[in-house]
Image (cartoon, rainbow, N blue to C red):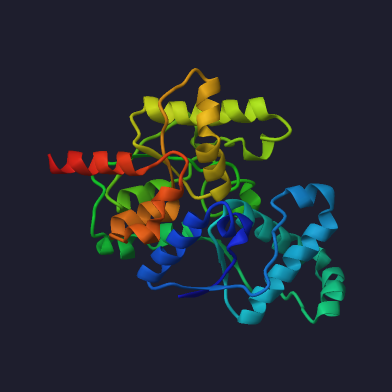
Length: 291
């Protein structure tokens, strides 16, 4: 299957390990991700707050570029998925003509022909197919799924699965041979969008998720969103320090877990880029499997 790939800003900068592992997993599974030429930032809800019209036009342009490729869109970022799907819904609900007047100035037109998918959904939908390709079952790895906000909410826009009890991450974890570990924070906000206006609150949210994962005996957290990963990984040392130094828990990108199970190489996983190194926990789980 071929997709118009919208990487988003974070995958191209702070979370290059997510980009590398997503492309490697897609290639192994026979997906062709063709980066949308000339894509721009989705706005990440911040541009939408300041200038909704500019944000809508930016994403109308992104979608029009994808439509010119004749391919469905896929992104590995929950926030990008939400912003693109939200823009598409608004355009189809009556603002298309006005947006197209502006797009015509740069030779583009939005038609509404390209669906927007999350890489999470594609992996979940094809679990039965790729689970037979698993070379290194993660049988002793205990993984705490963390959906965050934008993977499932608002439900009328994301509407892939239940926003109250999603199971896509759990299905993927099991397909990798690992064990899902439930934590109360699995559907809560990671704190990313609050880290500047309300840093103390954001750190408390981060510490809560990490502490719950540690107490539940999870070897790692798993998130399909690079913004959640940034918050839970990058800010984890400070968050735990403020919370009296609880045990750190590494955070994996979705593609890193799947890639690990598929037996992809170290270069493809880029695990050394994390703040909280996940490699010791993965080695510990692997040793437990051999004993």
